[in-house]
Image (cartoon, rainbow, N blue to C red; front, top):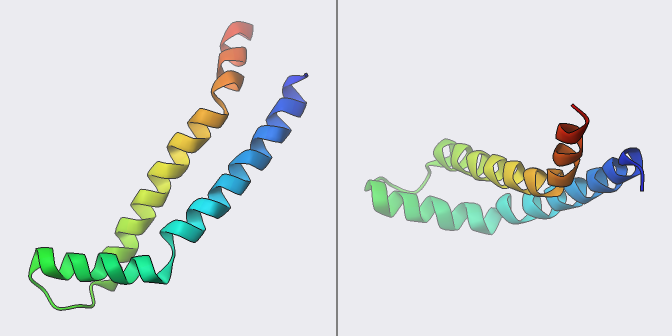
Length: 83
């Protein structure tokens, strides 16, 4: 299999993974649960929407970083051999 076809397949895998992770991380029910948990931990009232949004963006970014790293690992190894 050529590196180009491998990268195409991996790009599709990353896109599907991103869609699934987004559906999980951006779920409104999860937002409410995290918001209630933060209100309890921080001792504030319910409604820390911007904090929750930033937290979810951070978690989504981490999940995407590690899933992309996993999917493209063999491509990185191939590039290292070529250099």
